[in-house]
Every structure is written in C-alpha cells, then in structure tokens.
Length: 81
Image 1 (cartoon, one colour):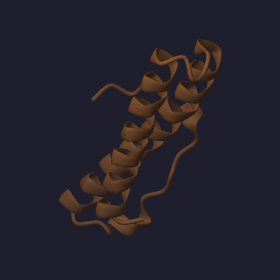
Image 2 (spheres, rainbow, N blue to C red):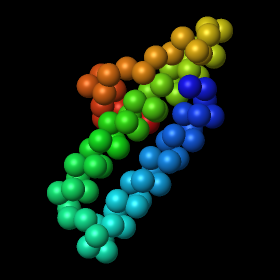
Image 3 (cartoon, helix red, strand yellow):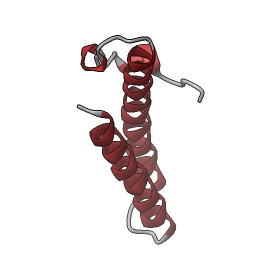
C-alpha cells in the first residue's frame, strides 16, 4: 500500500467511526455493538498510522518505503501521535 492508499483507508475508517457514533445516537444500534466495532476500527487505525509512519521514516532516511510492513495490532495499539 502506498501513502495515498493508506491515507484513503484512514479517511474511510474515520468516516465509519462517525457513522457508528451517529447510528448509536439515533438508536439504530446499541452502545455495546458500537463499542465493539469502534475497538476494531481503532486497532486498524493504529496499524495504518504505524504503517504510514514507517513509510515516511524509511523515505526520510533513504530506505525503500515499500519495505514497511503492517505490524500486529498488539504492537501498535494505543500509539500516540
């Protein structure tokens, strides 16, 4: 995945997050379902942000950004920007 694809995926997941919050606010889904889905989204977002940071760091230091790999969610969970 290149940088533009990663950013597009991040944008799509943020949109999904907004839709989930709207769905629970309007009573379309219950808060337990929302929380479960949000946790999944947050893990995937952490992985995307990590991959994007890896690619940028590799580019900055003259390495091939295509060598960056998605790391397990347990490794990247709760990263702070």
